Image (tube, rainbow, N blue to C red; front, side, top):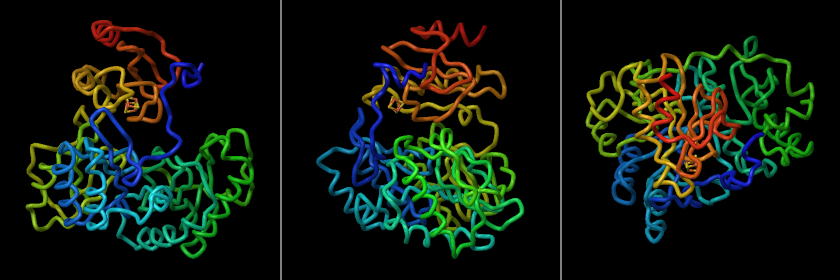
Length: 384
Ligand code: SF4
């Protein structure tokens, strides 16, 4: 049984937190910033880091949808932080605009202008879309090769295998051929079909398509083959840097901008950020080379930082990272909600009543193969 249906299931909020509507956590408010095109220019990046130090705990979360979160904000300073974010052009005008602009953009754009062309057109049309469930999002996976197929999203703009551009409903194998001029109307049509066919009950496109046939007009064109997930190191746009668990040290981030060649920061869903314009990087704060174990494990903040956390997560994940067999994935989750990794891992440890449930080859919310393990039990189970 999916444990989300059980009485012990974690509380799932019916809205997506943002800056206007922050989420309360064990260490204060979590204020989520959604950068336009998943990018900040150098002024914005440095300002966000200063605000994380001045208003938060000095750590910025890089989320699995390429957003950035300031943690540990006092409720009574939230208004002042919003003003500062607005001054830095890091805040939407209203909470509704912020909630609708749930768009993950590939970090690899700039070759032919397609992504830069599409993004403002889609943003301009968001208010005209029908009301969709809060968790639904758009993915602009329009670099030379799709890379975001595993990232959470419901409406996927991708390069086609035989066509320049497609819009694909998440969960469908193929999508509809579109052009930049028809992208917005195609998105509106697909969103309207989702609503009219009762999609709100399923909440997400993929779940809806498990029980409902997508009309032929929305499919028929295959996407290009998905590329491999990038690793830390140089790339044509700059330099990719890794942040273990997506925790970006704000002071370390400011230090990276001492290099005048660095013009911006692009966010990714892979615990990597792209330092735009950098050709080499010297830092102790971030992962600069491929193959680091820490980038292969998932762990949410857990207890005591998250009020739903049943266990401390990251110290254990770090301790176990190097013990995992090569190529096997590990997810340590403070509760069954599984925020750090929305999918299966080879091994998932889930906090429950201060102990650990062990789930193999499934997600945090799935049925465990063992329950109520102590830390010693966990080490024994994983080193057998
Ligand atoms: S999975 Fe982790 S971050 Fe998410 S609600 Fe549970 S304890 Fe909190």
